[in-house]
Amino acid sequence: MKQIINNLPKEAKDKHIENKKYFDKLKKKTPRNLDYIMQDLHDAEFKKTNCLDCANCCKTTGPLFTLADIERISKYLRQKPQQFIDQYLRVDEDTDYVLQSVPCNFLDTDNTCFIYDVRPKACREFPHTDRKKFNQITDLTLKNVAICPAAFNIVEKMKEKLPL
Image 1 (cartoon, rainbow, N blue to C red):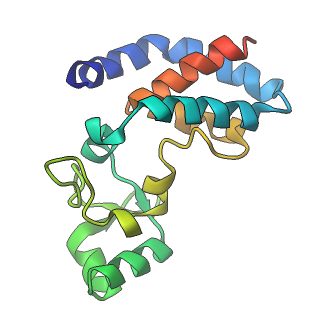
Image 2 (cartoon, helix red, strand yellow; image 1 turned 90 degrees about the vertical axis):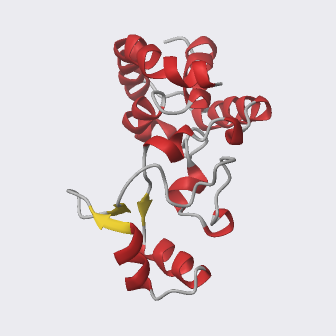
């Protein structure tokens, strides 16, 4: 897995122009059943992919934290929301709450998450390859293929299954 993760940024960069052109065409001519196809591709990939073998998302990027996330997690940690914000978060250039640093403070050495049951919505939904209206998040997907081997594989399978 380590070699796959190390090669992923280069492979994603090599495929970036191809993927961008593909997604541009997809936006212009979106198949009616795209979300069903994506759900099937997502499910098939995650039957053979164990995120605990990788956790690259937790090691290299930080999620956005909504106010609901902050409330839920701070309650779980028995902190006041402002204490949680002060200890773990910062406001980014888009005025969103994000982690002060990566890797994530809640990532354990075995790639498990200390706050898994109350993790942020962005973590629960990552890599977003099974989201409804997938064609609206292709820019996000282009970024995620460089972070998540499963997202990379899903996009490659997508191009095979839905040639444009």
